[in-house]
Image (tube, rainbow, N blue to C red; front, side, top):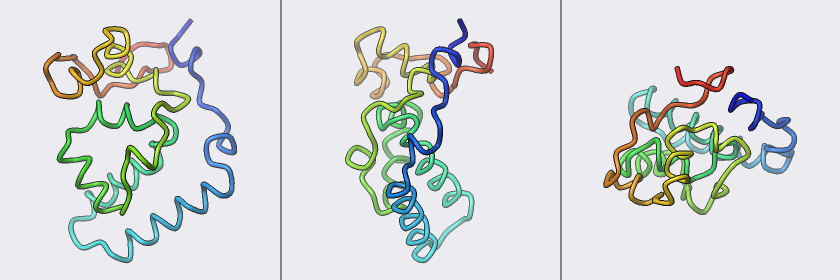
Length: 130
């Protein structure tokens, strides 16, 4: 069975019920009002905001370095570890997170003590990377 089939994307209403969707829009609007800088940084931060509930903060810290997480947190006015669930419904589609979980060494993968090739990859529709 493909990784995507094992961990399908749940309906949007499950991940972003109306109250959560309103909260996300408020955060995005606030970020748009306050932001000064290059548009691509804002766009990436907003992308992380939308993915966070699907993936969870643990996946976010596997795929981004500490500096990037801090930058996006500042842009959005949130704390990733407080705002998002630890593990979202499709977290295990993340190859880096899946490997870290299998190894039982999450923080070693995050810190770079254990190198994971393609740690930013998400499983494709056939369960493979790229």
